[in-house]
Image 1: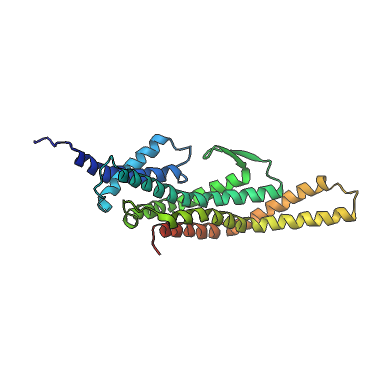
Image 2: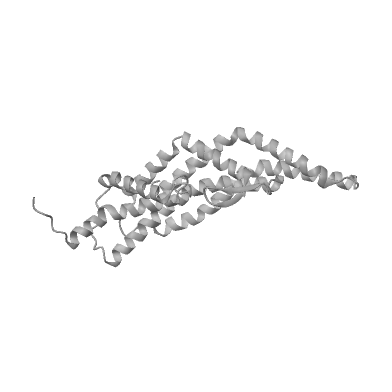
Length: 261
Protein backbone atom coordinates (compact mmCIF):
# COMPACT_ATOMS: atom_id res chain seq x y z
CA UNK A 1 0.00 0.00 0.00
CA UNK A 2 1.21 3.46 -0.89
CA UNK A 3 0.92 5.81 2.10
CA UNK A 4 -1.25 8.85 1.49
CA UNK A 5 0.58 12.12 1.85
CA UNK A 6 -1.17 14.47 4.27
CA UNK A 7 -1.21 17.91 2.76
CA UNK A 8 -2.96 21.17 3.51
CA UNK A 9 -5.53 20.47 0.77
CA UNK A 10 -6.36 17.09 2.30
CA UNK A 11 -6.80 18.65 5.74
CA UNK A 12 -9.08 21.26 4.19
CA UNK A 13 -11.21 18.52 2.66
CA UNK A 14 -11.49 16.78 6.03
CA UNK A 15 -12.58 20.04 7.63
CA UNK A 16 -15.19 20.64 4.98
CA UNK A 17 -16.55 17.10 5.04
CA UNK A 18 -16.72 16.37 8.77
CA UNK A 19 -15.80 19.28 11.02
CA UNK A 20 -18.32 21.83 9.76
CA UNK A 21 -21.28 19.41 9.92
CA UNK A 22 -20.08 18.41 13.40
CA UNK A 23 -20.20 22.05 14.53
CA UNK A 24 -23.81 22.36 13.38
CA UNK A 25 -24.94 19.05 14.90
CA UNK A 26 -23.08 19.56 18.19
CA UNK A 27 -24.38 23.10 18.69
CA UNK A 28 -27.93 21.86 18.01
CA UNK A 29 -27.66 19.03 20.54
CA UNK A 30 -26.15 21.34 23.16
CA UNK A 31 -29.20 23.66 23.04
CA UNK A 32 -32.20 21.47 22.21
CA UNK A 33 -34.28 20.08 25.11
CA UNK A 34 -34.05 16.41 26.17
CA UNK A 35 -30.56 16.04 24.67
CA UNK A 36 -29.13 19.38 25.79
CA UNK A 37 -30.16 19.29 29.44
CA UNK A 38 -27.79 18.93 32.37
CA UNK A 39 -29.11 15.41 32.93
CA UNK A 40 -27.30 14.24 29.78
CA UNK A 41 -23.49 14.26 30.23
CA UNK A 42 -21.45 16.28 27.77
CA UNK A 43 -19.58 13.15 26.66
CA UNK A 44 -22.85 11.47 25.69
CA UNK A 45 -23.94 14.52 23.70
CA UNK A 46 -20.57 14.71 21.97
CA UNK A 47 -20.67 11.01 21.12
CA UNK A 48 -24.20 11.35 19.76
CA UNK A 49 -23.11 14.37 17.71
CA UNK A 50 -20.19 12.39 16.24
CA UNK A 51 -22.49 9.48 15.39
CA UNK A 52 -25.07 11.70 13.69
CA UNK A 53 -22.32 13.51 11.77
CA UNK A 54 -20.86 10.26 10.45
CA UNK A 55 -24.33 9.16 9.31
CA UNK A 56 -25.25 12.52 7.77
CA UNK A 57 -22.03 13.36 5.91
CA UNK A 58 -22.64 10.93 2.98
CA UNK A 59 -26.10 12.47 2.44
CA UNK A 60 -25.26 16.17 2.40
CA UNK A 61 -24.07 18.26 -0.57
CA UNK A 62 -20.39 18.80 -1.21
CA UNK A 63 -18.84 21.37 1.10
CA UNK A 64 -16.94 24.30 -0.45
CA UNK A 65 -13.18 23.90 -0.79
CA UNK A 66 -11.87 26.53 1.61
CA UNK A 67 -8.51 26.70 3.31
CA UNK A 68 -8.88 25.76 6.98
CA UNK A 69 -6.77 28.70 8.18
CA UNK A 70 -8.52 31.54 6.36
CA UNK A 71 -11.16 34.06 7.41
CA UNK A 72 -13.76 32.36 5.20
CA UNK A 73 -13.33 29.14 7.17
CA UNK A 74 -13.93 31.01 10.43
CA UNK A 75 -17.08 32.63 9.01
CA UNK A 76 -18.40 29.28 7.80
CA UNK A 77 -17.74 27.76 11.24
CA UNK A 78 -19.63 30.57 12.97
CA UNK A 79 -22.50 30.20 10.50
CA UNK A 80 -22.80 26.48 11.29
CA UNK A 81 -22.88 27.19 15.02
CA UNK A 82 -25.51 29.91 14.49
CA UNK A 83 -27.71 27.57 12.44
CA UNK A 84 -27.48 24.81 15.05
CA UNK A 85 -28.14 27.13 17.98
CA UNK A 86 -30.99 28.88 16.13
CA UNK A 87 -32.83 25.67 15.31
CA UNK A 88 -32.24 24.38 18.83
CA UNK A 89 -33.65 27.63 20.24
CA UNK A 90 -36.81 27.11 18.16
CA UNK A 91 -37.43 23.80 19.97
CA UNK A 92 -36.41 25.26 23.34
CA UNK A 93 -39.06 27.97 22.93
CA UNK A 94 -41.68 25.19 22.78
CA UNK A 95 -40.58 23.92 26.21
CA UNK A 96 -40.25 27.36 27.76
CA UNK A 97 -43.75 28.22 26.53
CA UNK A 98 -45.29 25.71 28.92
CA UNK A 99 -42.88 26.69 31.71
CA UNK A 100 -43.96 30.33 31.43
CA UNK A 101 -47.64 29.29 31.30
CA UNK A 102 -47.21 27.19 34.44
CA UNK A 103 -45.51 30.09 36.21
CA UNK A 104 -48.34 32.47 35.27
CA UNK A 105 -51.01 30.11 36.59
CA UNK A 106 -49.07 29.26 39.75
CA UNK A 107 -48.43 32.89 40.63
CA UNK A 108 -52.11 33.84 40.23
CA UNK A 109 -53.53 30.93 42.22
CA UNK A 110 -51.01 31.18 45.08
CA UNK A 111 -48.75 28.24 44.21
CA UNK A 112 -45.78 30.45 43.45
CA UNK A 113 -44.22 29.63 46.81
CA UNK A 114 -44.29 25.90 45.99
CA UNK A 115 -41.14 25.70 43.89
CA UNK A 116 -38.54 23.05 43.22
CA UNK A 117 -35.22 22.85 41.43
CA UNK A 118 -35.52 21.92 37.78
CA UNK A 119 -32.85 19.22 37.30
CA UNK A 120 -32.72 19.86 33.55
CA UNK A 121 -31.84 23.56 33.79
CA UNK A 122 -30.61 23.89 37.38
CA UNK A 123 -33.00 26.73 38.30
CA UNK A 124 -35.89 26.93 40.74
CA UNK A 125 -39.33 26.88 39.09
CA UNK A 126 -42.89 26.44 40.43
CA UNK A 127 -44.08 22.86 40.79
CA UNK A 128 -46.84 23.42 38.23
CA UNK A 129 -44.30 24.49 35.60
CA UNK A 130 -42.26 21.37 36.38
CA UNK A 131 -45.37 19.20 35.96
CA UNK A 132 -46.01 20.80 32.58
CA UNK A 133 -42.38 20.21 31.58
CA UNK A 134 -42.56 16.52 32.47
CA UNK A 135 -45.89 16.16 30.65
CA UNK A 136 -44.76 17.71 27.38
CA UNK A 137 -41.48 15.75 27.47
CA UNK A 138 -43.36 12.46 27.75
CA UNK A 139 -45.85 13.53 25.06
CA UNK A 140 -43.05 14.65 22.75
CA UNK A 141 -41.27 11.30 23.06
CA UNK A 142 -44.50 9.30 22.77
CA UNK A 143 -45.41 11.12 19.55
CA UNK A 144 -41.92 10.48 18.10
CA UNK A 145 -41.36 14.21 18.09
CA UNK A 146 -37.63 13.71 18.65
CA UNK A 147 -37.41 11.77 15.37
CA UNK A 148 -39.30 14.48 13.47
CA UNK A 149 -37.09 17.11 15.10
CA UNK A 150 -33.91 15.35 13.96
CA UNK A 151 -35.39 14.83 10.49
CA UNK A 152 -36.17 18.54 10.10
CA UNK A 153 -32.72 19.42 11.38
CA UNK A 154 -30.91 17.03 9.02
CA UNK A 155 -32.98 18.51 6.19
CA UNK A 156 -31.26 21.83 6.90
CA UNK A 157 -28.04 20.48 5.37
CA UNK A 158 -29.85 20.36 2.02
CA UNK A 159 -31.79 23.63 2.29
CA UNK A 160 -29.00 25.53 4.05
CA UNK A 161 -25.83 23.96 2.66
CA UNK A 162 -22.48 24.62 4.26
CA UNK A 163 -21.24 27.98 3.03
CA UNK A 164 -20.87 31.66 3.80
CA UNK A 165 -24.61 32.45 3.64
CA UNK A 166 -26.11 30.79 6.74
CA UNK A 167 -29.38 32.04 8.21
CA UNK A 168 -28.97 35.60 7.02
CA UNK A 169 -30.46 38.71 8.54
CA UNK A 170 -34.05 37.53 8.03
CA UNK A 171 -33.41 34.32 9.96
CA UNK A 172 -31.81 36.16 12.89
CA UNK A 173 -34.75 38.57 13.11
CA UNK A 174 -37.18 35.65 12.95
CA UNK A 175 -35.40 34.06 15.93
CA UNK A 176 -35.63 37.32 17.86
CA UNK A 177 -39.36 37.62 17.16
CA UNK A 178 -39.86 34.01 18.26
CA UNK A 179 -39.57 35.17 21.87
CA UNK A 180 -42.75 37.23 21.46
CA UNK A 181 -44.53 34.15 20.05
CA UNK A 182 -43.47 32.17 23.12
CA UNK A 183 -44.96 34.68 25.57
CA UNK A 184 -48.11 35.11 23.46
CA UNK A 185 -48.76 31.36 23.30
CA UNK A 186 -48.03 31.00 27.02
CA UNK A 187 -50.53 33.75 27.80
CA UNK A 188 -53.21 32.10 25.65
CA UNK A 189 -52.56 28.78 27.37
CA UNK A 190 -52.75 30.23 30.87
CA UNK A 191 -55.56 32.73 30.22
CA UNK A 192 -58.55 30.47 31.17
CA UNK A 193 -57.09 29.48 34.54
CA UNK A 194 -55.87 33.02 35.27
CA UNK A 195 -59.31 34.43 34.39
CA UNK A 196 -61.07 31.91 36.65
CA UNK A 197 -58.85 32.79 39.60
CA UNK A 198 -59.29 36.51 38.86
CA UNK A 199 -63.08 36.16 38.99
CA UNK A 200 -62.80 34.41 42.36
CA UNK A 201 -60.56 37.20 43.70
CA UNK A 202 -62.97 39.87 42.44
CA UNK A 203 -65.89 38.10 44.11
CA UNK A 204 -64.01 37.99 47.39
CA UNK A 205 -63.23 41.68 47.04
CA UNK A 206 -66.94 42.40 46.71
CA UNK A 207 -67.65 40.21 49.75
CA UNK A 208 -65.01 42.08 51.76
CA UNK A 209 -66.70 45.40 50.97
CA UNK A 210 -70.06 43.96 52.00
CA UNK A 211 -68.74 42.33 55.19
CA UNK A 212 -65.54 44.08 56.35
CA UNK A 213 -65.26 41.84 59.40
CA UNK A 214 -64.61 38.82 57.16
CA UNK A 215 -60.99 37.59 57.19
CA UNK A 216 -60.32 37.61 53.48
CA UNK A 217 -56.81 36.17 53.78
CA UNK A 218 -57.88 33.17 55.86
CA UNK A 219 -60.85 32.36 53.63
CA UNK A 220 -59.92 33.64 50.17
CA UNK A 221 -56.54 31.99 49.80
CA UNK A 222 -57.64 28.33 50.15
CA UNK A 223 -60.77 28.86 48.06
CA UNK A 224 -58.75 30.59 45.33
CA UNK A 225 -56.28 27.71 45.42
CA UNK A 226 -59.09 25.16 45.08
CA UNK A 227 -60.63 27.01 42.13
CA UNK A 228 -57.19 27.25 40.51
CA UNK A 229 -56.64 23.49 40.84
CA UNK A 230 -60.12 22.90 39.42
CA UNK A 231 -59.34 25.16 36.44
CA UNK A 232 -56.08 23.26 35.81
CA UNK A 233 -57.99 19.96 35.91
CA UNK A 234 -60.51 21.27 33.38
CA UNK A 235 -57.73 22.58 31.12
CA UNK A 236 -56.06 19.16 31.00
CA UNK A 237 -58.78 18.03 28.57
CA UNK A 238 -57.45 20.48 25.94
CA UNK A 239 -53.78 20.08 26.80
CA UNK A 240 -52.96 17.61 24.02
CA UNK A 241 -54.56 19.65 21.17
CA UNK A 242 -52.67 22.73 22.31
CA UNK A 243 -49.42 20.79 22.48
CA UNK A 244 -49.95 19.34 18.99
CA UNK A 245 -50.66 22.80 17.56
CA UNK A 246 -47.63 24.42 19.18
CA UNK A 247 -45.39 21.51 18.14
CA UNK A 248 -46.60 21.82 14.57
CA UNK A 249 -45.93 25.57 14.66
CA UNK A 250 -42.41 24.88 15.97
CA UNK A 251 -41.57 22.47 13.15
CA UNK A 252 -43.04 24.87 10.60
CA UNK A 253 -40.88 27.64 12.03
CA UNK A 254 -37.79 25.43 11.75
CA UNK A 255 -38.60 24.90 8.09
CA UNK A 256 -39.15 28.64 7.60
CA UNK A 257 -35.67 29.26 8.96
CA UNK A 258 -34.39 27.00 6.23
CA UNK A 259 -36.27 28.93 3.58
CA UNK A 260 -38.91 26.24 3.00
CA UNK A 261 -42.37 27.82 2.44
